[in-house]
Image (cartoon, rainbow over all chains, first blue to last red; front, side, top):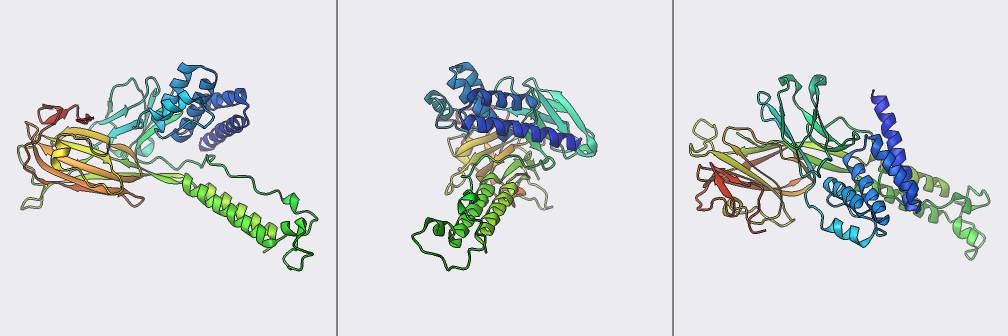
Length: 262
Length: 164
């Protein structure tokens, strides 16, 4: 089951990645199809889902489908209020994003004590976005409830605590979570991109052992490219970029539970 | 070190660093701590009928709002969550908050919504955050709900900010 989930997750990530590549290359029809397929396949998390909806908003705005653009933008901003369209997006969309909400969609799980009923709720969600709530707990406890806009209550066995709840859209994408942290998910593609590394072929000549320093002359371009310090510097820059990507893509989310007085 | 080896090492480090990028969810407990009685238990005045909790995003140098400002829901920071729950009743989970500096304010009110206990903690949500304790102390204030209505100790609508 886990292997299947990983396989599907990988396929969805590949679809979204291909759509990103098409979008950046200006192949907008291909990008729209790719994002749509990734969306409908389900399995996206909130971050990636926000990105896909933002791109779909941009594509719809570029096609003058204003209602469609507004709908996708509202979802993207509900998931990530700081999400902003790319610089190539229509001005109207960028202004709409600036005027968007400051509070993200939130899933809340109230479970003061194991003896009390558990209440689950979704706040600040665009209409019709959240369709299902999946409540999971220890010992394989799982309940799936339809979300119709009103707080839901259930009484799981005490052994099921701690609980977690995921809110899903109609395709099964996760739009929010609350409660006990879910099992670690496999890493997915990172958003930031770096410039491609220099082509090894430009080094030329197959001269691998160029550390001896007795070059032909500094005015020779080939000698410049063969300078080991140049490549060491490039290696360090690339490593630094990788660390920067890792740091920027890392982070902590804090899920604050129900206040208790004691 | 050969030139290609240096570049390959850089690429390997970049890949390792990039793959290590991930988001970690951390559960944080929020505890409201009233004064203690002689037996060490919570000394909550009998007049307390409801609690109000407000969570606001703070700037780097911001301190907590005063009891009056919090009681009257005056604009302060960026309100992320507000809730009211009956004394002895169930509260709602606050949910997900991004890393950063936050103010957690808790207030006990009587039937007329007068503040009786108040406390606020300004804290950084950092990876080592596990439990946030908000000590509350007796206050004397004529403030009530500000622009909000008082309904049996609860200010409604609790999430409203007065003066916005």
